[in-house]
Every structure is written in structure tokens, then in C-alpha cells.
Amino acid sequence: MTFKAGVKNLITDVGGLRVGNAGDNKLKSGTTVILCDEPAVAAVQVLGGAPGTRETDLLEPHNTVETVHAITLSGGSAFGLDAASGVQAYLREKSIGFEVGEHKIPIVPSAILFDLINGGDKDWGTYPPYRELGFNAAENAYIDFDIGSVGAGLGALTANMRGGLGSTSSVTESGLTIGALSAVNPMGAVTIGDTRHFWAAPFEIDHEFGGLGYPQPIPDNTTDLQIKFRETQRGGANTTIAVIATDAILTKAQAKRLAISAHDGFARAIWPSHNIYDGDLVFTLATGTSGRKPNPDEFIDLCAAATSTMARAIARGVYAADAKPDDILPSWIGFK
Image (cartoon, rainbow, N blue to C red; front, top):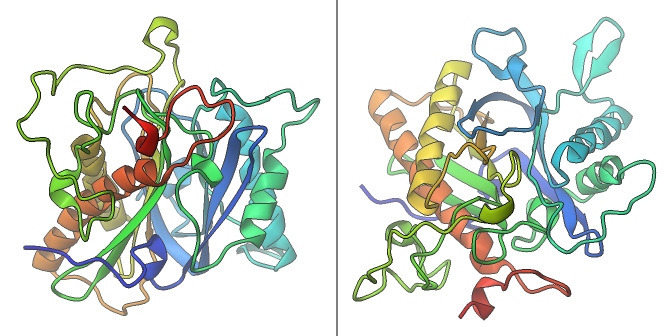
């Protein structure tokens, strides 16, 4: 079983989604928003030990609300949770939301990553800027969008180089589309040993992150642990946050299973992953725009595609990151 990339090789190859980014280079932080043209079935799986989230409990299969209107990924640690308020404000202006009597309440689950120690100026005064960044990101949401050092990935770091915002897509043999979006900021590394070769190399399509494959020969230090900020480690100082999306019609329980499978992509792309100081999390969005409910065999393929597509998005986010003034780590292209 092999998968091909979608037309744009972005999460927006899944019909019914748009992505917007907003950020501040002086702050070295930003926000990314995924807007749903129509409410989408959603779920979440958290496997990191230090998550920062908003409105994730409602996504559990046994809870009432079935669909969401947007997902927000943001830098800023706990301050970045304000970004979802900006997205809600944007959607409320558009009269979009879950109807309760005469009111429409936009449902915008969100997650944050820690990018406070990255060389940026975090002296923002009384109120952090993330609500405004969320609103601006929603205003800027389109089918085509940038990856790399933008949005929630603007200030992201891995153990040894800059992180970034990555996105990829896959089409299964049965014609279902799946896409991934990842803000890559792990405690561990996405490259092998002290090389520029990505752990996700076996899943790469069309040289989307350099086409280097695995190093030959495999270096002796392949499995050496590289840990970001090991000497000053604290809870929440990392986190890779992501969205896996599909145009299939899924139940909330199936969406949850897809998020679990996408976490396997973390494990294939980051060494180590899912640590006590990572807040690793995957949201699922199922837009249903294909009009098809997958049969059991098709769902197995979809879960496998979730793993590989997520691994590729993680590598692609780091590959696409560029150098910024006052960086404390090099970009992939400048890594020696």
C-alpha cells in the first residue's frame, strides 16, 4: 500500500478547510487557525505529559457537541490560549456558531506550544497579543497558505534546530483524502544523530523535505538522545501540536481513532516523543465532503495514512523553516 500526495500537498486538499497564519517576528511567536466551511466532526488525543488546551473535553465521543467551527494552534504557552477568543470573535461577526436559543457560540478548541525561550521579545505589556493574532489569522485563512517559520511555527524549536509549521496530504487507493498540519516544537529531534537526515525519511514523497533518505552508513550515534533545554528543563517547555483531517464521513469515535493513529506519526518523526515535558496533541477534523463512509478496510488504510502523513508534515515543517535575527538555533538549511 502506497499513498500519493494531494494536489497542493497541504491539509487544505481536504475539502471544506482553510488555514490562516499570523505572527510577530519581534515576538518570535504566532498563531495558526484552521477554519471549517461547514461544522466538522472533531476529536482529540493527548499523549504528551504537559498539554495546554481549551475546549478539548467536549471532543470526547461520549460528550454532546458533535462538530466544531475551527481549531486554533498557537505559540505563547498558556498566554496563547487567548488566540481562540480572537477566532471566536471573528466567527461571531460572521454569525457562525453552535445555536443555543437566539445565540450562536463558535466552538473553537485550541492547543498551545511553549516558545517563550527563543530569543523573542516577550515584553508585551499588560495583555498578551494572542487574541489579536487569532483574529488576524482567521481573517487570513485561505486554501493556499505558507509553511515553515509562520503562524504557530514561527518561534518553534527542536532539540538541535528551528522547528516550524508543516503540512502534507495523502490520497488513499479508495480515493479518500487525508491531510496533516503540525506546529513542530518537540523536546527531541526530528533528524538522525548529528545529520540533516530526517527520521521520517521512509514516508517522504517527491523530495518534499530534501530527499536525503537515511544516512549511509547509519552513524554510530543514531539513537543518541538530544534533549532541548535539558539543563533547564521544565514542564511545558516544548510540545508538537497538530491536526489530522479527512474528507471521509466519520463518527466522533472514528475521529478519535484517527487522532490516535496520527500520533504514531509523531513517533516515526521525532526521537524521543510523547515525553513528560511535551504536550503532544492531535486534533481530528472530518469534513465529510467526499460523501463517503469508509468500510473497515478503507478505515485501516486511512489510519495508516494518518501515521505517514503526520510524520511527513513534521519533517516538512522543520525543512521549510528559515533563519530569523537573534535565533538561538540554526535552521535546517544552516545546520552543520
